[in-house]
Length: 174
Image (cartoon, rainbow, N blue to C red; front, side):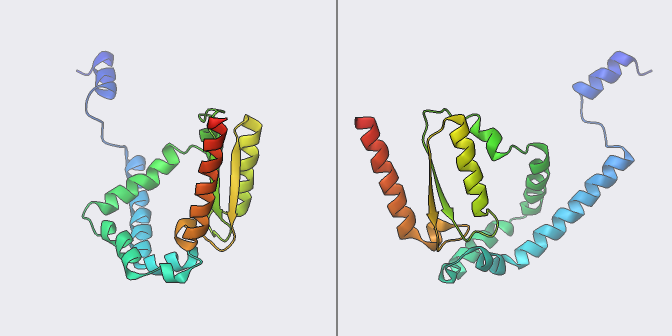
């Protein structure tokens, strides 16, 4: 006979109970959607990269291969599914993450202004949130760059980073 104490022990310490029929069905639907997203994305790696890179010459076979190769691993679909599901379970906004940044820690945002995913308005919002929290934040707008400004405009990103680091060094030395 299953007592209340034994039931509680099974629920909290023992092996996880099988999901009920509704939970099982939802898991199957999520897995099917993740599978579709995974395989369709795998087939569209190059066009997606061409969309987010302003400098199309950066989208070469090495870049495509560096993204496709991990997707060929036998466990890639399971990992992809977990990442998609984790996003819903553990989603922390950038604004919530800023709460953990000490106000003494300077922040540098280097933003590709032609990024189709992370629009420039998001950089402005982050800059504003930093100001509200008393965090020193600098924004460098890289006009001729998309989602990966370090690839689209490496000289501009390098110059911005070196300049910012030199400024931080001067502030520490003063």
